[in-house]
Structure formats: structure tokens, C-alpha cells
Image 1 (cartoon, rainbow, N blue to C red):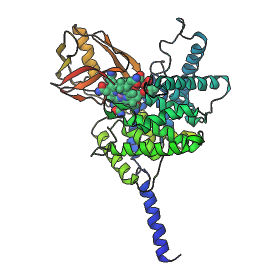
Image 2 (cartoon, rainbow, N blue to C red):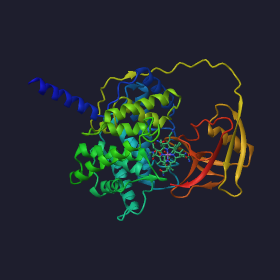
Image 3 (tube, rainbow, N blue to C red):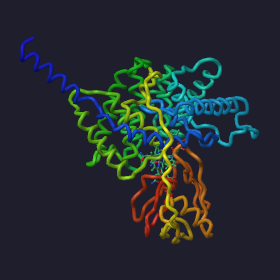
Image 4 (cartoon, helix red, strand yellow):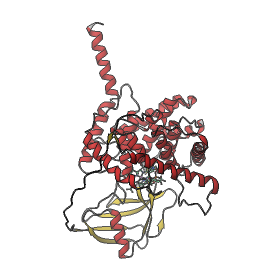
Length: 434
Ligand code: B12
């Protein structure tokens, strides 16, 4: 080959590199620290606290928790299999030992967890699981309707997640089920209160990437490829000047999706470098992701995505996590701060200033307000932590939620358990539709 030819090959190679979303290796100490944050959660084995996403996140990461992982998966199996048996036998029977049956998305994460352990679903139990998830999706398809005017009972995020989970197990879905998500993307899907939900788009993109690789719906192939491009375009447009896709907390899933595709003409390399730099800067700044987000970040830092569960590598070497050393904390009485809590939309409106120790979470503030009287709230356990479901006795209706807003008008990027208010801050709880 002449020198010009060699130059062209080299330039071609560099071009191809620039098109992939590749993150430069992340400091292994940082990954270890992030992994250590997950360890205490692996000791929480009660049904409300089990989270299959933690298991998936670790298995796709570069770190491992050795025997804890096997025990955790064992408990996931006990819980999810049992809950399925009860769904099958009692169908809403009062006797059910389960207060809340796993949602479509939770079952889907459980299927991902099985695949992360290189298991394929089969046999009676496995078939039941797959049928249940397919039934959920059929129900959602019907809820959206032929004319696409309706909404899924859960969300398009869970719709995409369920499709992805069945896809990594090579379980085929009817074209019409896939078509419903394709249509949503083609029509500029799931806007949440006027914003693109980057997580939702990324989850749909991951499901489509899996379908593209697995050839499960050949008749939809062209549409799937086009939809992947649309999702990519929208996620790239959502990149902030600092580099996040949407916010810090949606960047992990967005990166997972972007890593599944490479396209000529799109400089994914530079875009992803910038996102990684923004993520690292935020992490060093103390913006600690919660367990759920962390479990989506660890695979991305290891250059893996949920789509890799199509053919997982269960023998890949992973560094053993040691429990973090406890920092001997000096016994100091923290100073008190005041946080104002307001619920202006109810009659009579509530506004009260509460004193809590500095470093308290918003949940501590709510508890204190409730203790003081005149304020009541309720939460529901979820994979992301306690979800605020009722304020002053007002429960949310369909497609409503209690939004947490930093006054005057900044919706928080964290939930009540993770957010730490500052002295003098006002937090508004606002009932909104989504
Ligand atoms: C869909 C969704 C919503 C929907 C949920 C309603 C529904 N029927 O689905 C709506 C729009 C209402 C919503 C609200 C909020 N959300 Co939201 N949501 C999501 C999303 C896209 C998917 C959740 C999901 O289905 N998970 C899969 C299923 C299987 O898990 P699950 O635990 O069973 O799901 C339930 C919980 O996740 C819960 N939920 C949804 N959001 C949040 C947020 C928090 C903090 C908690 C504790 C629970 C929770 O609703 C789900 C359905 O019941 C995630 C994205 C993600 N990467 O996780 C963001 C996400 C979890 N939400 C987020 C946030 C910040 C919020 C709000 C706190 C925003 C606000 N300022 O008010 C509120 C919650 C306030 C409250 N009342 O406690 C962040 C959390 C970031 C973090 N640091 O933890 C995420 C990661 C989005 C992001 N990238 O920033 N959300």
C-alpha cells in the first residue's frame, strides 16, 4: 500500500474512533468508592428494599461483591418467584403475603438480573415470568390504544424497560407491541411536563438497539433503525453546556444508550468525553447519585450497557470490593438550620418553618413538621427510595404527582431521602400533572 493509502486508512480509523461513544478509563479508585456505596444496600434483604437493578449494575461493572452477590440474587429469586406464584394463584386475594405486587418495570429489572448471571429463563417458573411481562405489555398497549390517544398505566420508561428485558432473553414480542413504542418515539414521545425525559428516551433507545441486534422483529427493522437515530438526536440535543445529557442523573442511562451505537458523521467520541468530564466533576463536587442512579452509572463507567446482556460475559474479571473504612467522626453537635415548608395549593395553605440539624435530609424536615403537628405526609417504597404519595391527606390522582420544588420555581433533581436542604431554604410541595 502506498503512503497515501496508509494515510487514508489511518484517517479512516481515527474517524471511526471519533464516531463511537468511548469513555477514557475512569480512575479505578473512584469506581471502587462508588461500588462501596452499594455494599450496605446488599445487606438489606427485605422485600421492600430488594432492588434487582443493584445486582445488574454490579454485574455489568468492573467491581464485585463476591458472595454477597450470590446471596442477593438468591433473595431476589425467592421474592420474585413467590410473588409471581401468588399473582397466579390468588389474583388479588386478600391473603396474599405481598402488600404490593412487583410492577412491570420491577419484573423487567428482575429478568435483567437473571440474564446478568448468564441465566436464560425457561421451565415453568421462567415461562410464567415471561408470560406475565408479555401480559403487562399487552395491557399497556391497549391502554395507549389504536389511536395512540391514551397513556400507559405505568410509563413509557417501563414500557421500554420491559421490551428490553424480554429482548435480552430473546423472547419475541408481537410487532404491534413494539410498534406502540416506535410510534411514541416517531411522534416525539414522552414529554414530561414539556421536557424530554432523557431517561425515558434512553430506555426506549436501549430496547430498540437490542431488537436491532437480535433480529427479533425483522418486519420492523427499518423503523427500528430510524427510531434509534431519532432517540440519539434528541439525547444529543439535550446535552447541557457542562456536558450532561438532561441532568447529572439521566446522564448514566444516556451514556449506556449512546455506547450501543456508532454512526458516521456524528462525533460521539467528543460528546461522550464531555459528558464523562461533567459526570466526574459533579461526583467530585459531592453530587452523589442515589443507589438506583449509581446502579445505572457503574455499567457506563465500565463501557457496558443493558444491551450487553444479550450475550453477557460472566467470567470477566472484576475487582473485589472491600467495605469502606469508617471515618472516626468527631462527636460534634451539628448547628441547627431552618427550612420553610410550604403547600400553597391546598386550602388552607400550609407554610411553616422547621428547625433541623444541619445535614438533615428533606425527609427529616417532613418528619419534624409532622411531629410538630399541622402537617402530614405519606410515602411509598420504590427502587429509587421513598416516593412522596400524599401530602396533608391529599393523595395523587392518575398521572399526578407531588413535585418537590425549591422556591420559587426549581424542581429538585433528588427525592426526599437524598436532598439536603440548606439554611433558609424554602421547599414547596406542588401537586402537578405529568
Ligand atoms: C417515570 C419517572 C417519574 C414519574 C413517576 C410516575 C410513574 N407512574 O411512573 C414522575 C414524573 C411522577 C416522576 C416524579 C419524580 N421524579 Co422521576 N423518574 C421517572 C423515571 C423516568 C422512571 C422511573 C421508573 O419507572 N423506574 C423503573 C421502576 C421499575 O422502578 P420503581 O422504583 O418501581 O419506579 C417508581 C419510582 O421510580 C417512582 N419515582 C419516580 N421518580 C422518582 C424519584 C424519586 C426520588 C423517588 C424516590 C421515586 C421516584 O415512580 C416509579 C413508578 O411508580 C426515572 C428515571 C430513572 N433513571 O430511574 C426518573 C427519576 C427516578 N426521577 C427523578 C426525580 C428527581 C423525580 C422527582 C423527585 C422530581 C421532583 N422534583 O419532584 C419526582 C418525585 C417526587 C416525589 N413525589 O417523591 C430522578 C431521581 C434522581 C435521583 N437523584 O435519585 C430520576 C432518576 C430522573 C433523573 N434522571 O433525574 N418521575
